[in-house]
Image 1 (tube, one colour):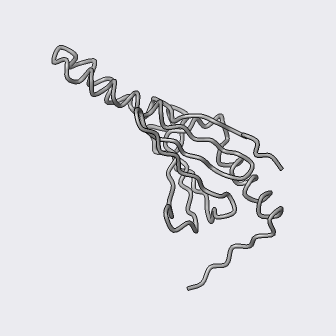
Image 2 (tube, helix red, strand yellow; image 1 turned 60 degrees about the vertical axis):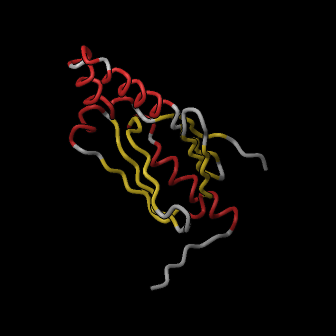
Length: 139
């Protein structure tokens, strides 16, 4: 079975809105312009890709690092919408996993219209059924 991309995207630049406004106000100092440009590039180059088997997170402007999470390791999906993000129609998605290297993954400022949390939950159920995997919590 080949791996197919279900969704690929980046965080919304709305998460940097406050910094962009401050940079605009203090642009005469020149340094804030470079800070805003660096933050823009960091956000733009933080790419999330949901496939039918994994969640891939690629970070980095010059040097790239890709972290993968097998979907059957997802324990819980939590959608968080601070007040400011609700006004801008974006949300944070926190994924709690059983992966030792990354127990919590935060996808920041994902456009709400994408419906990524529902797509992720549906794909987790599909892959668990295909691989016949069950999550067991021991305390």
